[in-house]
Length: 486
Ligand code: ZN
Ligand code: MN
Image: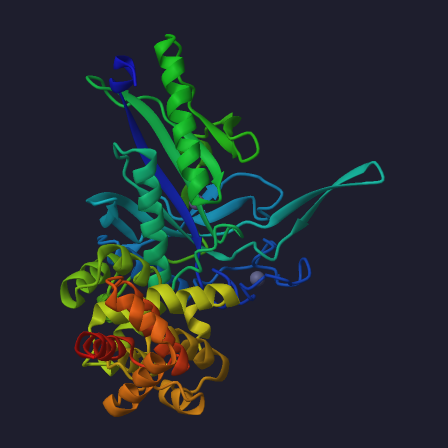
C-alpha cells in the first residue's frame, strides 16, 4: 500500500433483504412458496395490485421480523407503520412497494461477531418489513424479443436489515455477513439461500480521507455469494482510490457486480429517498406492537451462534476451530450437545472431533445435512464410548460408524454382529504372541542382534493373526516382555 492508500479509509454499510419463512404472502393469503410453481399461479387481486383490493398484514411475518429485531439487539417501538415507496417497474404491479420508511419495527441494534481472532461489533441501524417484487423474464424467440412477468414472488414477505456504516476491511464485511446469515438461520426466519436470492446483500462503500468527512458512497447490488461481496468491495475500494488520487470525484450511483469480469459496472445514478415520494400507506392501520408479543418473542429467542461458540469453548473445552464448525448450524450444535449429555463419561472434545471429522465427512459424501442423519446422538456417544474404552479400535470405530449410517443400528449391535470387539484377554493374546514368535524365529533373531525396530513388525504379525481385533497396546507389551526375558 502506498502512503496515499493508507490515508483513504473504506467505510462500508450493508443492506440485506431476506425473504421470511412464512406460509403466505405479506398482505394476502397466497402461498409464499413459489419454487417450482407455474408462473402466475400464486396470485390474487391483492398481490397483483388490482384496484379496490385491500392488504392485510401477515401476523407471522411481523413476529419473525420482531424476533429478528430482538436478536439484533434493536429497540422495538410500540407503534410502527407501513409506507408506500413509489416507483414503477413492470414487476411491481401496484406501482409502489409497501415498505416502512420512518417508523421501522427495529432500530439502533448491533451484532457481535468474530473475524479471525477478533471479536467485533457492527451496528444495525434498522430492521423493517416490506414485500418482494415479481420477476421479469426477457426472452428472444425467433428474433422476437419479449418481456414476460411472473407475479408469484410479488408480495412475498421481505425483511430489510440496514447496518450502520463502519470502517472495515472487505474480509471483515464478509465475516459480518456470514455471521448475520447464521443468526437469521438460527432464528428460523430465513433459509439463507444466497444462490436463489431468498437472502441478498447490497453494499455501500465510500472512502474517507483520514482527516476528512465521509466520501460519496457507491452502492453495489446483486452480490449472491460471500466471495462476490468481498471481491466487489476490494474492487470498489481500489477503483474509488484510483479516481480520488487522480483528483476525480466519485459519482453517487448504483453499480452491479459482474461475476464473469470480476468488476463492478455502473447501472444507474442512485435514487435519493425523496425520489420515492414516501407517504403512509392509507390502506393499513398503524401497527401496534404489543408488549406481550415482545416478551413472548424474547422467551423464544434461541442462544445465538456467537454465544454458543464461546460456550462450547469454555464449557466443553472444544477447540475454537472445531467449535466454529459445530455451531455453524443450530441443528448440528444441538446434536453435539445431546450427544454430550448422553455420553456423560466421555470427553466432549473427543465427541466433538468425531462429529466434526467423521460424521460431517460421511454426511458430505452422501450430500446430506445433520437433519437427515440416521444416527441418533446417543448412539454416536455409544460408539465413541466403545472406542474410548478400548472395546474396539479407532479404525474399527470408523467402520462401525459407516455401518450405523447404513442401517441405523446402535454401535454395540454392530460390533457384536460383525465380531469387531478387540481381544484384550491376556491369556488369549499371550498364546497368539507365542504362536507368532515360534513360527517366525528369524524375527526374534534379528531383534536379539540389536535391530529393535523389528518389534513393530512382530506386533503387526500378531495384529494380523488376530484379524485386527487384538488391542495393539496390550500386544506390544507382551511382545516386549517375551523378547526381553526369553
Ligand atoms: Zn395474493
Ligand atoms: Mn428494500
